[in-house]
Image (cartoon, rainbow, N blue to C red; front, side):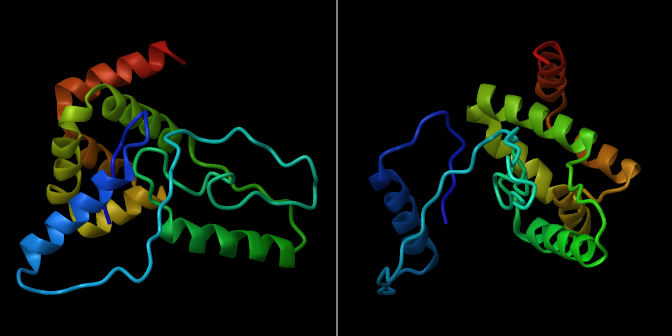
Length: 172
């Protein structure tokens, strides 16, 4: 899989070339064949789209199950699906909303990635290599304790992140 954070879609050849380079580096002298190609575009913002039908529940990207800053949705799909199912079975009102702090951090991270794209590799390396796996998953699912969230934020490039936070607040 290859991922780019960009304001425009690149030529498909670039993505394929990235994957070929990776396979050649990691698996030299191995032959392979692409049997299936999947591609997609993940928006780096939350949807304000509300269903006009009370019997329709937006799921996936339109339902804001995908983290805007990382594209992470895997575990969120399980968690939110269970939440929806439980509420429907109990005949309770549905309300699956992203926590405000998570939306705010995603906005800050998206600003960072959009304005310092040349530095986004360092950002994600800091995020994934300087934190415990359990804390990363908790952060990605929005189910993290405040103290752990602060530790993750402190592991990231501080100067540009702080500037991104102020710009995000100003642009709000």
